Length: 266
Image 1 (cartoon, rainbow, N blue to C red):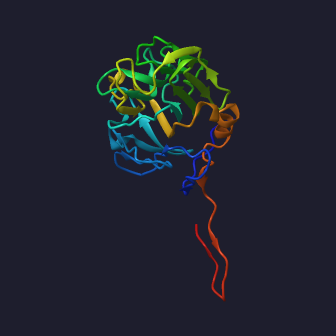
Image 2: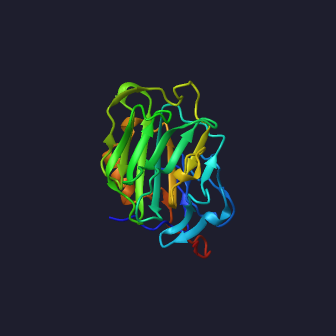
């Protein structure tokens, strides 16, 4: 199965059970502001340069580039309280993975180390979810198949705090969640007691260019405090089958009344 095309004309159904809290569809057309169309909204992102915008057969995209530090950031991020689910539909520009990691979504504390990363690993390009203040002390939840094939893929990472419980899991292309072993962790604060203040798409929000994803993003979706038990294997598989199911695309009809005409809105 492959990713289906993104609608070009739609309204967001914020009442839909799967509607993200923060939704980025890359279709503003121009400029450096990336609008949050989710049911909560308010997380406006900034492109490093307007030349990142483009189009693909599947719809509007933005392209991130390591060599020119093309990335997307917000430096006034407020994290959720209990857990965070991150999802991106992306493809790589390169056919082979670089020697450094390629970061798709990340959070960090000010100018300090990132401690939450949804990324592709160095050398082999495996999807991976890290959560531990960037120290790798609790390890990664990592897949075993490379994704540097220049095709569109969906990757999702879910992180939470807890005491001796799995704290991170990973799904690629709607596959069943791969769940970490048990760890003790604090969410959303890092080991030093500070909450993250930055979020980035296409790179770590405080990184040097060598960890920026050379690739394109068709959509980014974020859910805050959705609950670990609410997002099971069926949930993520269903979203991969139709990642746009919370977008209304059906024309609106008005029935005739007292001789009036019927209007069909495009």
